[in-house]
Amino acid sequence: MASKRRTDARPAKGANGATSPESSAQDEKTLHHQLLRSMLLQRRFEERCAEAYAIGRIGGFCHLYIGQEAVSTGTLSLLRPDDYVITTYRDHGQALARGIPSRAVMAELFGRIDGCARGKGGSMHMFDKATNFLGGHGIVGGHIPIATGVGFAIKYRGGDQVIVCFFGEAAVNNGAFHEALNMAALWKLPVLFVIENNRYGMGTSVERASAINDIYERAASYDMPRGQVDGQDVFAVRAAMKEAIDRARTEQIPTLLEVRTYRFMGHSMSDAVHSTYRTKAELDEYLKRDPIALLRLQMEEAGTLTQEELEAMDAAVKAEVQDAWDFAEQSPEPPVEALFEDVLVDTTSDSIHAGRV
Image (cartoon, one colour):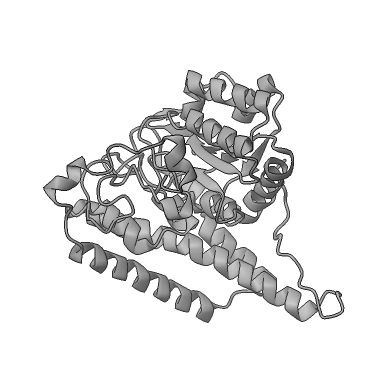
C-alpha cells in the first residue's frame, strides 16, 4: 500500500478549467513548505522540551517525538477540521501537527492554567476540544477501543468524519487491540489505525515481542485493508494515508497501516539514547534517514526550497518556540479548587442535543 510518489499536491486549475503550470508549481511549493514547517516546528519544540525537562520546568514523564515527525505531519495534514485524532503518551508532535497552538502545548507541559488541558494533563495527556484532539493516553493500547467507539458514534450520527488512532507496535500485543479491530471491521467503522513502529516498546525490540515481523498482517484476521509505509518519507506517508482516509470517509471501511519509523531519542527522558538496548551504530544508521533532512533533499531536487528560505523558516520556528516557552513561564499555575473542576461531564441526551457536550 505504500507509495513511492514524491508529492500529491493537486494541480491548480485556470479560469478555463485547464491546469496552469505556474499555479501547479506554486501549489506544490506551498504544500512542501507547509509540510517542512510542521516537521521543523515539532523538532525544535521537542528539542526545547528536552532542555526544559533537564532544568525542571517539565515534571513527570516526558516522551519526545524526534525522528517520527513525518508520520504526524504526513497523516494529519490530510484531515479536515471536524475529523478526530486520538493517540498515545508520545503526543507533543501530533498535537502541534493537528494545529493546537504551540503556546497551549508548552503551557500544558509546564503544568499551567493556559495549557490545552488547563495544566492537568501534562506531557502524556494533551487534549483539545477545538481541534478534536482526544488525547494523549498513558495506558498502552487503552485508547484503541475508544477510537473504535468514536468511529461508531460517527456512523451512528450519520457523519462522514474519520478518526485517526496512533499507537506503537508494542500495543498490538494487547487484547484490546484485537477486540477493537474486530469490531471496527465487523461494523464497518471509519477508523484509521496507525501503528508507529519505531522498533522498540520501551527497551524491548519488536523481534523479541512479536511472532511476526510484518505487524500490519495482523489485520488479515479481520479481513481489513492493511499496508506498510516508509515512515521517514512524508510523501509516502501522505499517499498511503490519503487512500485510507478516503476509504474511511466514503465507504466507512477501517484500515490498519504499519508505519516504519524510528525515534532518535530514548523511550522517555529518563532513558539513555543508546548503549542499553540499542547500539550507537544502529542509531547512526537510522539518523542517515532523518525525515526532515530527507524532505529537505526532496524539496531541493524539486526546486521548491532554497537555503535562504530554509534559514528563514527555521528562524521563524525557533522564535515561535521561544515565544511558547515565555508564554508558559508567565502563565499561572491552576488554583487548588481546579482539582474539583472538569471531573464529571453531563452526557445525558438533553445535554448533548443542547450542544453543552
